Structure formats: C-alpha cells, structure tokens
Amino acid sequence: MKKLIYIALILGLLSCEEDDNDIVTDSIKPKKIIEITNETQDTSYYSYDGANPTLIESNNQLITFEYQSNKLSKRKIFRKGDDIPWLYQEYEYNSESKLIKESYYINENSTVEGWIDEPIDSYRLSAYYIYEYNGDKPNIEYYVNNYTNDTSSYTLIEYDSNNNITSKNQYTHSVGEYVKLRAHKYIYDNKNHYFKNVNYPAFGKIFSIVSNILIEEKTGYSISWDYQTGHSITDSTKTTYNYSYEYNEFDYPVRIEENNRTMIIEY
Image 1 (cartoon, rainbow, N blue to C red):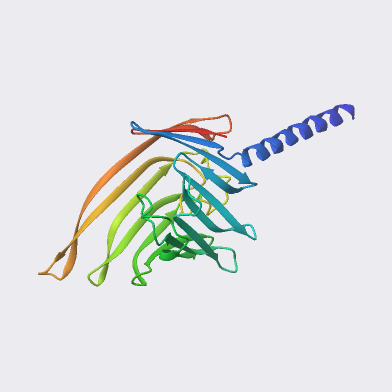
Image 2: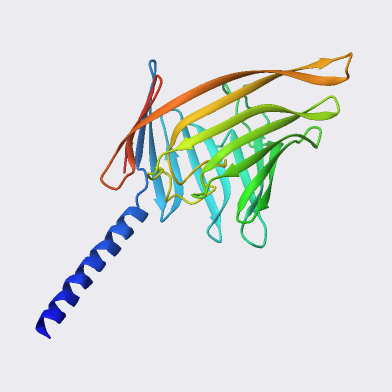
C-alpha cells in the first residue's frame, strides 16, 4: 500500500510539473526584438496586458493598441515625438467575435516621408479590408479603395492542419476581369512562432502565429492587355526566401536569419 501511495505521489508531482511547463510556454511573448540589416539596426520594445499588446516602441515610431470587450478596436501609429498618429486602424467584429472589417484612416496632412507643414488632427478613410470565413479561419480578404468604393483586389488564403497559412493568392481587377497579381507559398518548422501567445489580430494583418516560416516563395505577375484576344496576359517572377532559427529550451526562436537580415528576440 505504501509503495502504491509513493508511486501516486511521484506521478502527481510529474503531472504538476508538466502543467507548470505548459503554463510557462503559453505565457511566452517577445519583450524586445532587435532587427539588423547591412545598413541599419532597429530595436522594438513590447508591452502587454495579459495576452493583449498595449505598446510597441521602436527607434522611429510608437504603436498603441486599444480594446473593447477584450477585442482589439483601434491601433495607432505615431512617428517618434508626435502627439497625434499619422495613421490609425479600426476593427469590426461579427456576433461570433470574428474580425470582419479593418479600416485604415490616414492623417489629412501627412505623407509616409513626414509631415507637410504641421500635423493636424483630421483623418480620412483611405482603404479597408473585409474578411470572409470558412469555419473559424478567414479564407478571403477583400481590399476596398475608399475613393472608388470598388473591390479592386482580393486574396484567397489556405491553411494546413496546424492553422499555419500555406498560401495566399492575390487577384486584382484589370479591364473587366480579375487576374492573379501575387502568390505566396510557405513551408514551416514544427516549433513555436514568437507571436504565438499574442492575441490576434494584434498586428493588423493575417499571418501565421503558430509556427515559424522556413521557406517563403513569392511570385509576382506583370499584367498587360492583349488587344487582339481581348484578355489580360501575364508574366511571372519567383523569389525564394530561406529562414534559419536558433531556439530556446521552449522551442521559441531567439535568433532568425534571412538573407541579409537578422532578428534577435528576447522574452
């Protein structure tokens, strides 16, 4: 009897240890990311409220996040030293708490390069994205230009069994028909993405938050019009990116190498 009790206690302790490890790995989030290229080095610092990011501060910009009912409602992007954002995004959800619309508002007196004269607190809707779902995951992303209010392009998204995005195919409207503009294909490792425990859609776009990309293939299509046949014709160029990783003991990346770019991640 004593031997059975002893074995039960050991198993119980091992079970608690595994649970504690699960809690630790499920709470890992990046606190600092250093991005190094041949010419520049940029350091970003991340702050959170639980799984929700609240602030990202880098060398040249500041990003803040606002929430309603634990869902991201607004994301603001400031240039360093400015009191008002040059761009902000608003997010809308359906009754199932799924993201269905993401709107981009740009400062009326702003350009990407810098302010024209002085910044003013006046914004216009520039463009927005609308998402359709197949089950729990968005499989179609529509881009709408606010000036024309037309769906000028859309993207079809596919996933693997681990919820990683395996392909994104973008189509654009050209002379009465939709033609392929870009294609992305991804191959992943079996480790943990460094944003895995950060609430979606914290960074505003759909991307893998499960595993890390090992190989990325980008194919761009140049489009022209064939006046004899009355159809668009395309030519393609493929570029392949290879990523390598160093991982910590919990299988989260601490260093990422891709061509001439290095990312160092601290948790």
